[in-house]
Every structure is written in C-alpha cells, then in structure tokens.
Image 1 (cartoon, rainbow, N blue to C red):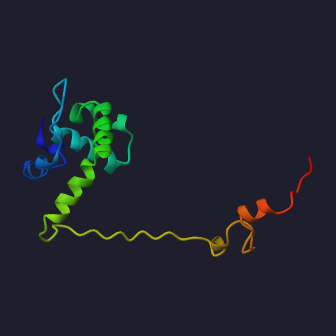
Image 2: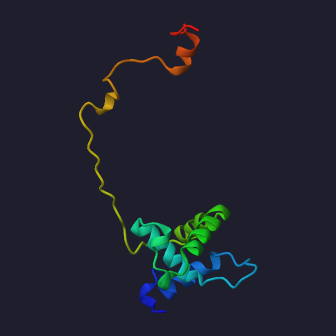
Length: 131
C-alpha cells in the first residue's frame, strides 16, 4: 500500500503508537496506521463509514468498531492529552471564523418576546380542559 493514502507520516505515527492499546485477542488486527487513516478520512470528509475506500483503509466495519471501542476506552482522549502536553510550538495554528447570521427577531423565539410561564408553574395551575 502506498504511503500517500495515510493521513499520518511514519514519524507522526511513531509518536502516537505507544499510546494505542495492545491487548488484542483473536484474529490478527488490521494495521493501526491504516485504520486511523480511514477514521480520519471519514471524519474529515464528513462522509459515512461505508463511504471510506475499502482498498485503502480496509473494511468500514473495522474503522467504525475501532473508533467506537477506543472512544469507550478513552484512548482518543488520552492520546490527545498526551500529544497536547508534549509541548513545543505548534506547526500550524487554526482559527475558525465561522459566522452564523440570524434574523433580527430570532432572539425572541416563536411568537416574539412574550413572557411565558414555565411548564412546572403551569402544572400547578388550573387545568384547561375538563374530563
């Protein structure tokens, strides 16, 4: 498999490899670098798991299962904390300049700026229907 399909270089993967779980049982595990590249591909593209190219990243079920299993084990959070605490100046700094515009009356919600009683207070009050 060509290295241009991987999202991580060999040097980058070498830094995160010690933080990945090694307690596997059963069938030989698909290459972690390949699977992480498939996971990054899906997350970056915003596509569905089945849309990941199988010939490049392996079965989509493997990508999904590994992503979910590692999330449940806290592997992703531990990995991000370890990399963030490693220090050093970042190679890239990203700034999100997303702006969301709302209609000038959007702040009031449905029906404008009426003051409405909360559901808890309304429950204590008179019933509006009869049996």
